[in-house]
Length: 209
Ligand code: G16
Ligand code: MG
Figure 1 (tube, rainbow, N blue to C red):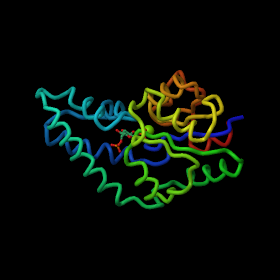
Figure 2: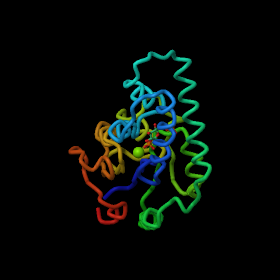
Figure 3: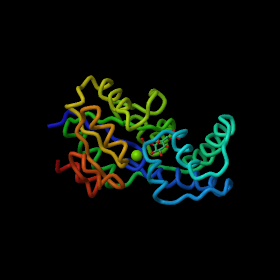
Figure 4: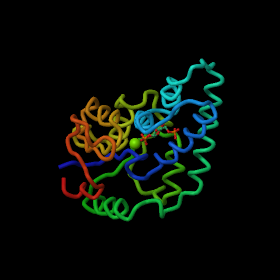
């Protein structure tokens, strides 16, 4: 019944979330700030600067805007080095097969990610030319839970939000989808989200909804 599916990238298509974690961990250790799974889950789907601000909530020190920019840049350097090691093998067989099957059903497939590194990631995992539209952190002013990134994706596909399903691993991503008028499917950390239209236990479950 949907004409298109808009996929979040990090935590849905591939597990770059583990690299974000490692890169933020390096910064928090340097600054002696506590960092755990609960804090990490709050970084899902939010922009780099917002992520940093969440991390710095635990800091006793105040940092200037300039210092914060340097922290975010340093984190991104570590993250980019980790991304450079990614190959098409980092795309699971399940995700690859499901994407192909959905495409051959005639569905339009798009990306809706907060990440400014989206083009690099898609290239590394061999999906550089696969999607019908890519909406990412490079063309938005407000990140999730604002629906902007998904609204831009549906506009690129020339479809109404009601014709699209958003797949998300972030609680803020599910919120963004419902605020934009999209149907949503929650996977991973977002599975407990009450407002999601569907809950996916596996990526392949998309073939059954
Ligand atoms: C991803 C991650 C977030 C990250 C954001 C920005 O979003 O989930 O943790 O802070 O992108 O990433 P970057 O620093 O690469 O611009 P998504 O929407 O793909 O889950
Ligand atoms: Mg995500």
